[in-house]
Each structure stands twice: as C-alpha cells, then as structure tokens.
Image (cartoon, rainbow, N blue to C red):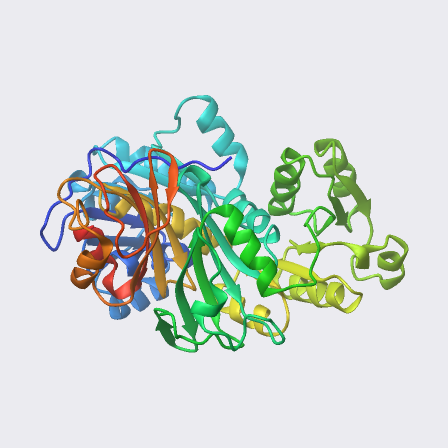
Length: 463
C-alpha cells in the first residue's frame, strides 16, 4: 500500500527565500540528498556523528552542520529544534530515527518524519494511528519494493511513478538499439490521445521535445499519461517483448525481497523466490503463502536450468550486496531471461548496472528521499517523483486561485513558465485531461508537471 499524506499543517509557506526550518538527522545518502534539494530555499540544519560526513557537507552545501548525536536533546537544541518546522530522521538505524523524532517532540512542535527499513515499525505506527512520537514513517524497504513492482509492469521502463490516485503514470524508458521508435520524430511516434512526451534525457542534457525532435538510441525518454496509454507506448518501444510480468523469480531472501513477494501476492500472482540459506528459506515459506520458496544457490546453473528460471518474464535480484545482485542479474540474462531488475544500495552504481545490461536498477535511498522531499514542497504539491538522480522532478500540484495557470489556456501561460518545464497531464474531478495548447486550466485541477531541478522552486511557487 502506498501512502501519500498532505503536507503538515504547521509548516509555514511564504514568499521569502527561507520559509521552512528543517533539521535533518543523518548525513548519509538520504539525508545528503534531501539537504541538497532544500538548501537553496530553506533553512537547513544537518546533524551527524560522523566527522567526515559533517565536514563534506560543510564545504559542499549551504547548510548548517553539527557533529553530534541526533537523538540527544542537547544536540537537537543546539540545532534549534524549538524553532524547527520539520525534523527528518534519516540515519541508517531505525531505532535512532524513531528516538530522534520522539526526543524532538519533547522540545518542539516540529512535524517529525522517520525513515525506517523494517516494515514492522510502519505496521505498528499505522495500527496505532501514529505512535513513537512520529508524525510520518517512511519505509525504505517497502518503497523500493513498490518501485520494483511498478517497473516490472512496463517493458523497458527504468522508473515508474503514479499520480492523481493512480490516474496518471510517469515512466522513464531507455530507448534500446533496434527500437522502432528510435530515429523517429516525436510527432511521428506520438499516436496517443492521453500521453505527453515530457522530456528526453540525452547525455548531460535535458531536451524538452517538440514535434520535430528526433528520438535517438540511448535517450532516456520521460512520458506522462494515462496508465493505459503509457503501457501501450511501452509496447511500441520494445515490440516482441510479450512478457506480462506474471512469471517473476526473486533472487534473495532480504526484507526487500519479502516485500516484493507480498506485493505480487496481493496482485494475485505466485512468484518464485530463491534463498540460499535453508533456515531462512523455511521461514520465508511460512511467511509467504502464495510464493514458491526454493532453498538453493541462485548461481547454480544446473538448478536454474532444472527450475526453468530462464523462461521467467522477470528476475528481481534482491540479495545482500550490490556485487551479488549484479552477478545474479547478468547470469539471469545469460540463461535467457528477458528482463532483470536489481536492488542497488549504492546510488552511484545505478547507471553502471543499467549500462552493462540490467533492465532497471532501484536504489532504496532514492525512493526514500523522493517520498520525504514532498513534505518540503509548497502546500499545494500533492506528490513528487525524482527523475534520474535529481536531474529533474515530476510534481503533482493542485491548482488554486493564485496559480498563474488558473483560468488561462496552456499556450498563453507557457510563456510565463521557466525553461525546461512540461505540463504532462491534468486530472479534473477524477477525469484525465490531456494538456494541449488550448486547454484552459481550472481551479481545483491536479496538474502533473515535469521540471528540471534548477527551476523546481520557481515552478512550485508560481503554479
């Protein structure tokens, strides 16, 4: 289940350069990513007990850094927790994050967000209607699993997110060699009534496509549209791939793997899971009623042949290390699996995985940062997706009377938008509306917008 809550009511939005005071506990990949997204338009304090991390952030970002224990009241007071609007606890230790939030509540009214890996804390928090002194909990394991399950539903997709309660889908596709779409213009490739070609990511450039823009092999193509049209386009991009993602093999018995299996079971599927440790395999077989759990080594070629793993639609590698996930993915491709998805703990490796042939690489920390960052956006921002390691974002914004789009045709208001911005979709009273030049945006509409990271604050502030 995906949870999307509105921004906390006590966060004060305004027109000044600094409108939210945020305290971030943890300067790892998640905390650093969040701090980098907020530094220009918010007052940010980052706490970490690692002197090297603190030193790196001090020189790389415009934030205040404090070396210390983020779960300590004295350290939080040094960070100015009494005046904070938002506390984000994002260390790699679940208990530390929960304690940091609870401690912050003793000294402030800050809205608290805790990142946890294990879903049992999330389950307890939900069952209690909020617990631990935490206003919102984000489970990185669950978010990574949700991303993987969305990705395997679309051939060639490297990232997928949903907006407007599932009525709008954003997908990032790699354009492979031999694709019928490669070499065609956008006008020629676009035969869809409910789809917008939002952007082309080409090397280090972001290209906002026009009708005559030519799609090239190696481009990363971002589309926004209805789920039906997005799936149809995925078929156009990679014809001949008729896998429906129903025969899924999961390699590894990690907690992310368990969450993937549960999500697939919820969809009525019966995945297969390979776990090397017999004791862990027995445990998972008891926990996953509709998953076939096999106790074996996923690198045993004879076993893979015997179990016809090469016939699977998709193999998901969710082992305990990036190196093992890469090996499992490449071996799956070698034996004939058409699609591989790998869990990647180190964000810098995601491009490498995809460059050597892994269909999609999912980083839990990216997914977690994405979920947390939306709390810091303008109050009308309903959802956020980070594109290609923070090169761009896709925002869902509810239009109010102050929006520069309200009551105007898109053709007219487009001139007032920053460069490298695309209006990808609109929903109105639960109905999908394809944005065209003469489409008039109305108050109450939900608009899904692609924007380069450098102009996000300007977009969120005017739309």
